[in-house]
Length: 299
Ligand SMILES: Nc1nc2c(c(=O)[nH]1)N[C@@H](CN(C=O)c1ccc(C(=O)N[C@@H](CCC(=O)O)C(=O)O)cc1)CN2
Image (tube, rainbow, N blue to C red; front, side, top):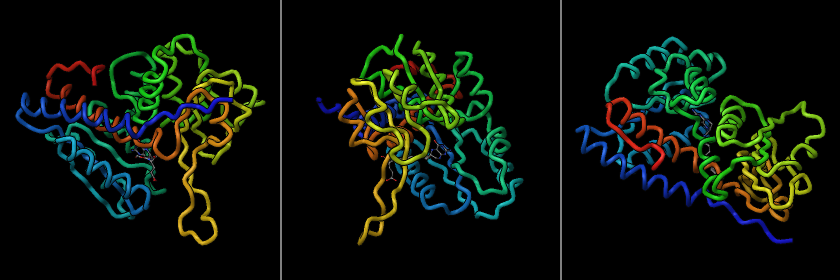
Protein backbone atom coordinates (compact mmCIF):
# COMPACT_ATOMS: atom_id res chain seq x y z
CA UNK A 1 0.00 0.00 0.00
CA UNK A 2 1.38 3.45 -0.92
CA UNK A 3 1.37 6.26 1.64
CA UNK A 4 -1.00 9.18 1.11
CA UNK A 5 0.41 12.48 -0.08
CA UNK A 6 0.30 15.12 2.63
CA UNK A 7 -1.74 18.24 1.88
CA UNK A 8 0.37 21.16 3.11
CA UNK A 9 -2.18 23.62 4.52
CA UNK A 10 0.54 25.63 6.24
CA UNK A 11 2.34 26.21 2.93
CA UNK A 12 -0.88 26.94 1.03
CA UNK A 13 -1.93 29.44 3.73
CA UNK A 14 1.43 31.24 3.41
CA UNK A 15 0.85 31.60 -0.35
CA UNK A 16 -2.69 32.88 0.25
CA UNK A 17 -1.39 35.50 2.74
CA UNK A 18 1.12 36.68 0.09
CA UNK A 19 -1.70 37.14 -2.43
CA UNK A 20 -3.78 38.96 0.22
CA UNK A 21 -0.83 41.29 0.96
CA UNK A 22 -0.57 42.26 -2.72
CA UNK A 23 -4.33 42.90 -2.96
CA UNK A 24 -4.29 44.86 0.34
CA UNK A 25 -1.48 47.11 -0.98
CA UNK A 26 -3.43 47.69 -4.18
CA UNK A 27 -6.54 48.53 -2.12
CA UNK A 28 -4.60 51.06 -0.05
CA UNK A 29 -3.29 52.75 -3.22
CA UNK A 30 -6.79 52.98 -4.69
CA UNK A 31 -8.83 53.80 -1.55
CA UNK A 32 -6.29 56.01 0.24
CA UNK A 33 -6.68 53.95 3.41
CA UNK A 34 -5.83 50.48 4.67
CA UNK A 35 -8.41 47.69 4.86
CA UNK A 36 -9.37 47.10 8.53
CA UNK A 37 -10.38 44.10 10.63
CA UNK A 38 -11.90 44.38 14.12
CA UNK A 39 -11.56 41.33 16.35
CA UNK A 40 -13.49 41.12 19.62
CA UNK A 41 -12.46 38.72 22.38
CA UNK A 42 -14.58 38.31 25.50
CA UNK A 43 -12.86 36.55 28.41
CA UNK A 44 -9.53 34.81 28.73
CA UNK A 45 -9.93 31.39 27.13
CA UNK A 46 -6.26 30.44 26.46
CA UNK A 47 -6.83 28.96 22.98
CA UNK A 48 -8.96 31.95 21.92
CA UNK A 49 -6.26 34.33 23.16
CA UNK A 50 -3.70 32.58 20.93
CA UNK A 51 -6.02 32.66 17.89
CA UNK A 52 -6.82 36.38 18.39
CA UNK A 53 -3.13 37.25 18.83
CA UNK A 54 -2.32 35.40 15.59
CA UNK A 55 -5.19 37.11 13.76
CA UNK A 56 -3.88 40.51 14.86
CA UNK A 57 -0.26 39.71 13.89
CA UNK A 58 -1.17 38.26 10.49
CA UNK A 59 -3.58 41.11 9.66
CA UNK A 60 -0.83 43.69 10.26
CA UNK A 61 1.74 41.55 8.41
CA UNK A 62 -0.56 41.59 5.36
CA UNK A 63 -0.66 45.41 5.40
CA UNK A 64 -4.11 45.85 6.94
CA UNK A 65 -5.25 47.58 10.13
CA UNK A 66 -6.13 45.39 13.10
CA UNK A 67 -8.47 46.75 15.78
CA UNK A 68 -8.41 44.46 18.80
CA UNK A 69 -11.11 44.73 21.49
CA UNK A 70 -10.63 42.67 24.64
CA UNK A 71 -13.54 42.61 27.08
CA UNK A 72 -13.62 41.04 30.54
CA UNK A 73 -15.49 37.74 30.90
CA UNK A 74 -18.25 39.35 33.02
CA UNK A 75 -19.09 41.97 30.33
CA UNK A 76 -22.89 42.27 30.00
CA UNK A 77 -24.23 41.11 26.64
CA UNK A 78 -25.70 44.58 26.02
CA UNK A 79 -22.19 46.10 26.15
CA UNK A 80 -20.91 43.63 23.56
CA UNK A 81 -23.89 44.40 21.30
CA UNK A 82 -23.19 48.15 21.68
CA UNK A 83 -19.55 47.60 20.67
CA UNK A 84 -20.62 45.62 17.59
CA UNK A 85 -23.02 48.45 16.62
CA UNK A 86 -20.16 50.94 16.98
CA UNK A 87 -17.93 48.81 14.72
CA UNK A 88 -20.79 48.46 12.19
CA UNK A 89 -20.85 52.27 11.92
CA UNK A 90 -17.07 52.75 11.75
CA UNK A 91 -15.92 53.34 8.12
CA UNK A 92 -12.35 52.25 8.99
CA UNK A 93 -13.65 48.77 9.87
CA UNK A 94 -14.31 46.51 6.86
CA UNK A 95 -14.58 43.22 8.73
CA UNK A 96 -15.85 42.32 12.20
CA UNK A 97 -15.15 39.04 13.98
CA UNK A 98 -16.35 38.05 17.44
CA UNK A 99 -14.16 35.21 18.65
CA UNK A 100 -16.13 32.08 19.62
CA UNK A 101 -16.97 30.54 21.99
CA UNK A 102 -18.53 33.38 23.99
CA UNK A 103 -19.07 33.12 27.76
CA UNK A 104 -22.23 31.16 28.67
CA UNK A 105 -24.27 34.24 29.71
CA UNK A 106 -24.15 35.51 26.12
CA UNK A 107 -26.37 34.42 23.23
CA UNK A 108 -24.03 33.75 20.29
CA UNK A 109 -26.79 33.89 17.67
CA UNK A 110 -27.98 37.27 18.96
CA UNK A 111 -24.44 38.67 18.87
CA UNK A 112 -23.78 37.36 15.34
CA UNK A 113 -27.16 38.74 14.19
CA UNK A 114 -26.04 42.22 15.29
CA UNK A 115 -23.02 42.25 12.94
CA UNK A 116 -23.65 44.03 9.62
CA UNK A 117 -23.75 41.07 7.13
CA UNK A 118 -21.49 43.03 4.75
CA UNK A 119 -18.80 43.21 7.48
CA UNK A 120 -19.40 39.60 8.66
CA UNK A 121 -16.06 38.18 7.46
CA UNK A 122 -16.74 35.01 9.48
CA UNK A 123 -19.79 34.30 7.28
CA UNK A 124 -21.86 33.29 10.31
CA UNK A 125 -24.74 35.81 9.97
CA UNK A 126 -27.99 34.21 8.82
CA UNK A 127 -27.99 36.51 5.77
CA UNK A 128 -24.64 35.07 4.67
CA UNK A 129 -25.83 31.54 5.47
CA UNK A 130 -28.79 32.19 3.14
CA UNK A 131 -26.57 33.73 0.47
CA UNK A 132 -24.33 30.64 0.51
CA UNK A 133 -27.33 28.29 0.32
CA UNK A 134 -28.78 30.17 -2.66
CA UNK A 135 -25.53 30.86 -4.54
CA UNK A 136 -25.50 34.63 -3.95
CA UNK A 137 -22.24 36.50 -3.23
CA UNK A 138 -21.65 36.93 0.49
CA UNK A 139 -19.10 35.75 3.02
CA UNK A 140 -18.34 32.07 3.55
CA UNK A 141 -17.05 30.69 6.90
CA UNK A 142 -13.25 30.59 6.84
CA UNK A 143 -12.52 26.98 7.81
CA UNK A 144 -14.80 25.32 5.22
CA UNK A 145 -13.72 27.76 2.49
CA UNK A 146 -10.10 26.89 3.35
CA UNK A 147 -10.93 23.17 3.03
CA UNK A 148 -12.43 23.68 -0.44
CA UNK A 149 -9.39 25.69 -1.54
CA UNK A 150 -7.13 22.80 -0.46
CA UNK A 151 -9.36 20.24 -2.19
CA UNK A 152 -9.46 22.16 -5.49
CA UNK A 153 -5.72 22.71 -5.36
CA UNK A 154 -5.20 18.96 -4.93
CA UNK A 155 -7.93 17.50 -7.14
CA UNK A 156 -8.84 20.23 -9.65
CA UNK A 157 -12.54 19.80 -10.41
CA UNK A 158 -14.62 18.20 -7.65
CA UNK A 159 -17.61 17.72 -9.95
CA UNK A 160 -19.42 14.40 -9.54
CA UNK A 161 -17.31 13.21 -6.59
CA UNK A 162 -18.95 11.55 -3.57
CA UNK A 163 -18.27 13.66 -0.46
CA UNK A 164 -19.08 12.73 3.14
CA UNK A 165 -18.96 15.50 5.75
CA UNK A 166 -18.89 14.12 9.30
CA UNK A 167 -20.36 16.77 11.61
CA UNK A 168 -23.27 19.19 11.25
CA UNK A 169 -22.11 22.33 13.06
CA UNK A 170 -23.13 25.76 11.78
CA UNK A 171 -19.46 26.82 11.63
CA UNK A 172 -18.02 23.88 9.66
CA UNK A 173 -20.27 20.91 8.77
CA UNK A 174 -23.26 22.69 7.22
CA UNK A 175 -21.34 25.36 5.23
CA UNK A 176 -18.84 22.68 4.14
CA UNK A 177 -21.71 20.62 2.69
CA UNK A 178 -23.11 23.70 0.90
CA UNK A 179 -19.71 24.50 -0.62
CA UNK A 180 -19.20 20.93 -1.84
CA UNK A 181 -22.70 20.95 -3.32
CA UNK A 182 -21.83 24.19 -5.13
CA UNK A 183 -18.81 22.32 -6.57
CA UNK A 184 -21.26 19.67 -7.87
CA UNK A 185 -20.27 16.93 -5.43
CA UNK A 186 -22.82 14.38 -4.25
CA UNK A 187 -22.89 15.28 -0.57
CA UNK A 188 -23.80 13.27 2.53
CA UNK A 189 -23.81 14.90 5.96
CA UNK A 190 -23.14 12.28 8.63
CA UNK A 191 -23.49 12.87 12.37
CA UNK A 192 -23.82 11.17 15.76
CA UNK A 193 -27.11 9.45 14.78
CA UNK A 194 -25.86 8.16 11.40
CA UNK A 195 -26.25 4.39 11.18
CA UNK A 196 -23.12 2.41 10.23
CA UNK A 197 -20.89 5.47 9.90
CA UNK A 198 -17.85 3.44 8.70
CA UNK A 199 -19.88 2.08 5.76
CA UNK A 200 -21.12 5.60 4.87
CA UNK A 201 -17.57 7.02 4.99
CA UNK A 202 -16.23 4.12 2.89
CA UNK A 203 -18.33 5.32 -0.08
CA UNK A 204 -16.63 8.71 -0.17
CA UNK A 205 -14.07 10.08 -2.62
CA UNK A 206 -13.76 13.06 -0.24
CA UNK A 207 -14.04 12.74 3.55
CA UNK A 208 -14.27 15.87 5.71
CA UNK A 209 -14.05 15.07 9.42
CA UNK A 210 -15.38 17.80 11.73
CA UNK A 211 -16.78 16.02 14.76
CA UNK A 212 -14.44 17.08 17.55
CA UNK A 213 -13.58 13.50 18.63
CA UNK A 214 -9.91 12.64 18.70
CA UNK A 215 -8.82 10.08 16.07
CA UNK A 216 -12.35 8.74 15.57
CA UNK A 217 -12.10 8.06 11.82
CA UNK A 218 -10.01 4.94 11.26
CA UNK A 219 -8.05 3.81 8.23
CA UNK A 220 -10.43 0.93 7.48
CA UNK A 221 -13.27 3.49 7.09
CA UNK A 222 -11.48 5.11 4.15
CA UNK A 223 -11.91 4.12 0.50
CA UNK A 224 -8.44 3.50 -1.01
CA UNK A 225 -7.24 6.65 -2.76
CA UNK A 226 -9.83 8.97 -1.13
CA UNK A 227 -8.91 12.52 -0.12
CA UNK A 228 -9.23 13.11 3.63
CA UNK A 229 -9.64 16.58 5.15
CA UNK A 230 -9.26 16.63 8.92
CA UNK A 231 -10.81 19.70 10.59
CA UNK A 232 -10.45 18.39 14.16
CA UNK A 233 -8.06 19.96 16.66
CA UNK A 234 -7.98 17.84 19.83
CA UNK A 235 -5.41 17.97 22.58
CA UNK A 236 -4.62 14.49 24.01
CA UNK A 237 -3.79 14.18 27.73
CA UNK A 238 -0.04 14.76 28.28
CA UNK A 239 2.17 11.66 28.11
CA UNK A 240 4.16 10.86 31.23
CA UNK A 241 6.86 13.45 31.89
CA UNK A 242 5.33 15.96 29.46
CA UNK A 243 3.37 19.12 30.32
CA UNK A 244 1.39 19.44 27.10
CA UNK A 245 -0.57 16.72 25.31
CA UNK A 246 -0.13 15.99 21.59
CA UNK A 247 -2.44 17.76 19.12
CA UNK A 248 -4.42 15.32 16.97
CA UNK A 249 -7.30 15.55 14.52
CA UNK A 250 -10.59 13.66 14.21
CA UNK A 251 -8.85 11.18 11.89
CA UNK A 252 -6.48 8.44 13.02
CA UNK A 253 -3.64 9.74 10.86
CA UNK A 254 -1.39 6.67 11.23
CA UNK A 255 -3.93 4.24 9.80
CA UNK A 256 -5.78 6.63 7.42
CA UNK A 257 -2.58 7.77 5.70
CA UNK A 258 -1.92 4.13 4.69
CA UNK A 259 -5.16 4.03 2.69
CA UNK A 260 -6.00 7.58 1.57
CA UNK A 261 -4.66 9.15 -1.63
CA UNK A 262 -4.12 12.47 0.12
CA UNK A 263 -4.65 13.70 3.68
CA UNK A 264 -4.31 16.87 5.75
CA UNK A 265 -2.12 16.60 8.86
CA UNK A 266 -2.93 18.07 12.30
CA UNK A 267 -1.32 20.46 13.02
CA UNK A 268 -0.37 22.16 9.75
CA UNK A 269 -3.34 21.17 7.60
CA UNK A 270 -6.70 22.91 7.78
CA UNK A 271 -5.94 25.02 10.91
CA UNK A 272 -3.61 27.60 9.29
CA UNK A 273 -6.14 28.09 6.47
CA UNK A 274 -8.73 29.51 8.91
CA UNK A 275 -6.84 32.75 9.57
CA UNK A 276 -5.50 33.06 6.01
CA UNK A 277 -9.07 32.89 4.63
CA UNK A 278 -10.19 35.43 7.24
CA UNK A 279 -7.61 37.86 5.83
CA UNK A 280 -8.82 37.07 2.32
CA UNK A 281 -12.44 37.75 3.34
CA UNK A 282 -11.38 41.04 4.98
CA UNK A 283 -9.65 42.39 1.88
CA UNK A 284 -12.66 41.30 -0.20
CA UNK A 285 -14.98 43.13 2.26
CA UNK A 286 -12.86 46.28 1.97
CA UNK A 287 -13.20 46.31 -1.84
CA UNK A 288 -16.95 45.67 -1.71
CA UNK A 289 -17.53 48.31 1.00
CA UNK A 290 -15.48 50.90 -0.91
CA UNK A 291 -17.08 50.02 -4.26
CA UNK A 292 -13.70 49.07 -5.78
CA UNK A 293 -13.78 46.20 -8.30
CA UNK A 294 -11.80 43.02 -7.58
CA UNK A 295 -11.47 39.60 -9.21
CA UNK A 296 -12.26 37.73 -5.97
CA UNK A 297 -11.60 34.29 -7.46
CA UNK A 298 -8.03 35.29 -8.32
CA UNK A 299 -6.98 35.65 -4.66
N1 LIG B 1 -15.29 33.78 15.31
C1 LIG B 1 -14.65 32.60 15.14
N2 LIG B 1 -14.37 31.85 16.20
C2 LIG B 1 -13.73 30.65 16.00
C3 LIG B 1 -13.33 30.24 14.70
C4 LIG B 1 -13.66 31.05 13.61
O1 LIG B 1 -13.39 30.73 12.41
N3 LIG B 1 -14.31 32.24 13.85
N4 LIG B 1 -12.58 29.07 14.53
C5 LIG B 1 -12.02 28.39 15.68
C6 LIG B 1 -10.65 28.83 16.13
N5 LIG B 1 -9.73 29.40 15.12
C7 LIG B 1 -9.91 30.68 14.74
O2 LIG B 1 -10.61 31.46 15.35
C8 LIG B 1 -8.54 28.71 14.72
C9 LIG B 1 -8.33 27.39 15.02
C10 LIG B 1 -7.13 26.75 14.69
C11 LIG B 1 -6.12 27.44 14.04
C12 LIG B 1 -4.78 26.81 13.73
O3 LIG B 1 -3.97 27.43 13.07
N6 LIG B 1 -4.50 25.60 14.24
C13 LIG B 1 -3.19 24.98 14.14
C14 LIG B 1 -2.79 24.43 15.50
C15 LIG B 1 -2.78 25.47 16.58
C16 LIG B 1 -2.29 24.95 17.91
O4 LIG B 1 -1.11 24.60 18.00
O5 LIG B 1 -3.10 24.92 18.84
C17 LIG B 1 -3.20 23.83 13.17
O6 LIG B 1 -4.22 23.12 13.07
O7 LIG B 1 -2.17 23.62 12.53
C18 LIG B 1 -6.32 28.77 13.73
C19 LIG B 1 -7.52 29.38 14.07
C20 LIG B 1 -12.95 28.54 16.88
N7 LIG B 1 -13.42 29.86 17.07
